[in-house]
Length: 310
Ligand code: NAP
Ligand code: GLV
Image (cartoon, rainbow, N blue to C red):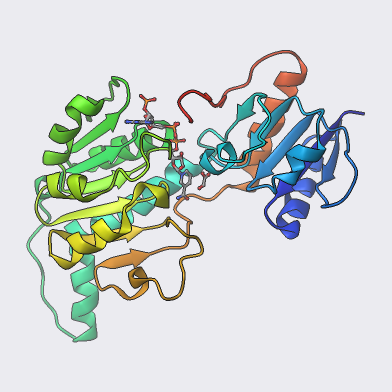
């Protein structure tokens, strides 16, 4: 019977995914990674933030399946074997991302944050009706997650633009691409949503220059990776009043250290990397289908390009 090895950052997560994947792939023996144990001879690895030792020990691997959408941490491992790497494709994450963005967007555009403050003062006051045109949204990254968010927000009536590496056509969304169109995209954006992968090209993209190019009084919603943000530049822009709010789900260091200024900053909302979590049933179905396709000689979706890094 062919083997699959499962390896996550923590032993309890490894056990969790081993049980789920064994139930989904009964024709395989699914083994959990144990530090110091001999090689299992597994053909496939299913991983999330695995210890690098997995790839020193398991030398028979033919493919790796990532239990998440982003592969930046995996690609940064020095000994990642040069074999096909597959990542989750949406797997229930695009609707979670859409909820996350619309929750924060509506809180601003509909005045819900102000109403919460009014309730604390037992103050009854109806605010003016929402004016969606005052909140032009710009989505960086028009992949599986970004394009879903962009179109859902556009369907609510907000003016929406998106920016990608290559030209994209999306109903209801003004599409920009490449370095040459970046500035124009930023200049018309007041609520910037980041859904880019973290690559050599995108690291530090939310920096002084970007922040200065957005509309005045703008909002940052970073739900991609902490490495996209130059924290010093963002804090300066918040403190200068250039940016009115930063909604941050991901950080350069996770967990976010207790002494980090983001925790107590009045213009920052922090969530602990939960904008879109991996869902057991979606992930098990997608990865089991992927492994069965590979075993039959086909190439499943979600193949990561080592050239582009996503
Ligand atoms: P995806 O399908 O690979 O889409 C990536 C998008 O980014 C594509 O539109 C791509 O352009 C664009 N892009 C890449 N490099 C670019 C560059 N240099 N300039 C401009 N555009 C560029 O990825 P996804 O599945 O939507 O996921 C996006 C990211 O979300 C993941 O990589 C992960 O980091 C993050 N994420 C976060 C959470 C969370 O809970 N916070 C959960 C899941 C995922 P093209 O269309 O031209 O290729
Ligand atoms: C989570 O951050 C993911 O990339 O799936």
